Amino acid sequence: MSFVDFRGGKVHYRVEGKGRVIVLLHGFLGNIEVWENLLFALSKRYRIVMIDLPGHGLTDNFGYVHKMDLMAEAVKAVLNELQLRRYVLIGHSMGGYVTMAFAEKYMDNLRGLILFHSTAVADSDEKKADRDKAIKVAKRNKDRYLKESLKKLFLPANVKKHPELLAKATNIANGTSAQAIVAAIEGMKQRRNTEVVLQFCHCPIMFIAGLHDLLLPLELHQHQFELPSTHKLLLLEHSAHMGFYEEPETVIKGMLPFLRNCFGPLEE
Image (cartoon, rainbow, N blue to C red; front, side):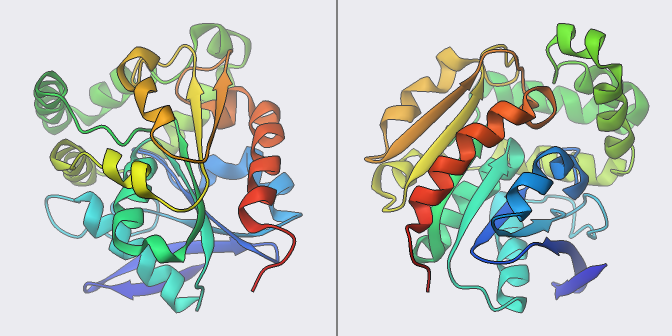
């Protein structure tokens, strides 16, 4: 296990493979284990850096609100420790929010970015109210909160066919403390709209979206797909919010050409 010091605590990360660098940032209630279905194919071609975001996995909590800027700085601390200068960031859900905060601060370090079931759009007033309700539930009864939240992540047909998917996600989520859950929800609620970053980002951008995603319905954020000058869209027709579990082969098939384009034939 590898850790880096950050703001009086520790950030956990793992590195697999060799070559040009891909950074994987999991979503809310996840940790680096969520990437297992993609790791073998990616690590055969690239050096993969997986990071447990603050309050998740083996990474410490850093207060009562984990803002996306703080999470981005934790990611940068790991990449600085590894002496890495250029890389592609892939962020799932909350990890995508962190990716956008990172891009806003450190755009020159990016060779490309992928928003995986994620968005640059800030929370609406209605969404913020929903997050406040979620905080109250999580504080009263963490187990109830997790049960209600996790079942929304998957297409029901996928869970019926592969019940182990929900079981695995639940096992990972159970490792997140109530304090970390609240801190992350508060951080997501407070995040800025970063669509301007998409508009002026100089690197290639890919969006991976689930046709049946209840958390990020396409009609609410599909306008962002046209903001970057260079972009690719992968629409997962048999997924909700967890494409790396629900359609891993389709995800890999769609990602690899994009990644090759990000790096080109040569890498410094």
